Image (tube, rainbow, N blue to C red; front, side, top):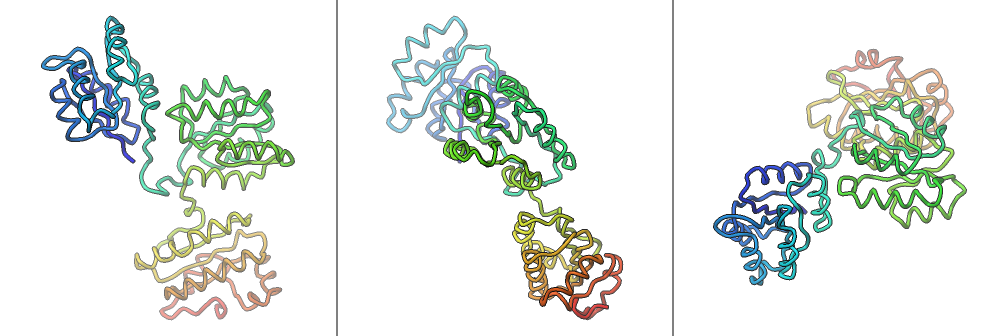
Length: 384
């Protein structure tokens, strides 16, 4: 839901500041220069909140507020008054008319956002529709852990990503970091003393800028009570120690709603390529299956008629991978896409040990596979 905020102020500078303060949030700013314009805008737009200056020409804020509260259709709209330092007492006097809060001019943008965030559920703007960000885009991750070795392990494990991993050891350092930066994701160790992890979780959730930031709980695998407590509090994911980096990376990508398809699918010239990485875990299999049909359909829709299933990096086979490959081939057949396989000696050898794969044949490289295509390309079972 996109909120509407009506700012009523005769100062154009103040209205510009208000618009700037909310530019990173999913809300619409409506402007009025005095009480008369403000009432008209309120009646027309029915805003979710009004920022109302007290001292204005034509009709001041007190008169507009009085008229607002006497109108059955507008009286429920929450109002935050804006006043100069000398008008603070005046705001307190008219509070009984019905104001939610007040802000003294001049004010900082973060104060305005913080106070408005108490009234309406401000949500940061996303970069676009679902899957708008790619796995190859930079991101800022904050790790709050009192054990330096764990922070180092996460930094080393994720150094192949474009993500910047920032490590701090205390809640105070974490709060200071969040006040200066807005992390894309936070990982908090539940081993912090005196349940500081849960206190920090609540503080992050109370901050308008980080209200929707994914927060992971980092906990020893055997500490089941702590895991249950983290789930009840509302942590986005539980990550257990010892840390499985591949699993952590997958959860981070999922929590940040990143498009990971480019890891496994791409177009090379006029050929669609599906590639399985060296360590294709069950998590990776799930990711590939999630994208499989849409990506192949997208390729066919763009006019591509040839596909290569590239396994040359793969260390070994298991039934989950075999089922994935069979599904990929079936999808290619359903969409009349010519396909062939690329593999290494280990994969070729292991294929001979499975009933479903013993007739599969492979090329040594993508170049060889692309060169093999003809107008009526055979299936992998008959490729030389």
